[in-house]
Length: 287
Image (cartoon, rainbow, N blue to C red; front, side, top):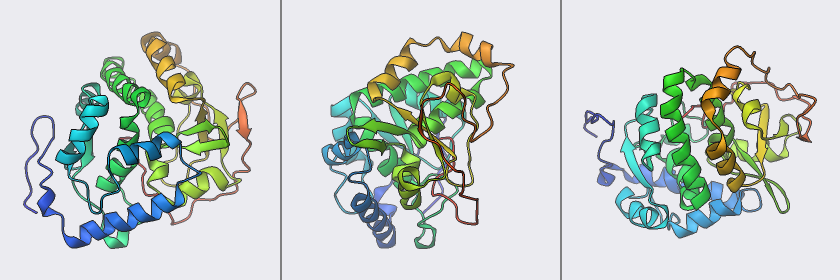
């Protein structure tokens, strides 16, 4: 594929025709593997999004076709980018209901680990929930909040909110905990680990707590935070004035990973038995 210089907003044509038969086979393999594993583990809103967006069609999705359905549902659209984009660009896209998705797909020898988000992580992992109105509104609110966080020099704090919700969030379901974060749902290994392992803590989600909690970028998570609902996530985000919160936390020390505070709602007290090895998750990036 010929390299194309990104525009000021870093978007490039998807050029769906450039995907090779091997690319489409990689997508189909990953899609089949995850969709066989996710039922009973993932939030039902995710599976509903897969169905509503017709993502069960074989091969790498064509963004033009995908956007016809997504725009009609929630006003969001997917735009192609060459990889990770600058913070300000990323936040501006989200604030305007555009989700930037990597234009490339991993090689067959990269099925279980990738340093940058590819089209499978970005589209399979993120886009189904953009068909859900409350989560779609939360993502826009996050983008708007990110633009404000730039003014407060608080991106490091805000990135933790994205990490522990959009990428690695758990939700309370009718039959127990379920996954919804894209970093989990697009990773075969973490889909098992997040719900089944005795190692991580699973704690009730509180905004200020999450903003003080660092995260792992090189292995499975030591903490997962559990929301009650997407409506709760949206409500807290919209009703919080982040400016005073950033100021209050400016000199507050981080809460060490794996620490459980006395006032933490505890779903699972992990034994932290998992030790990082050479195996790494498929996603370890903030956007």
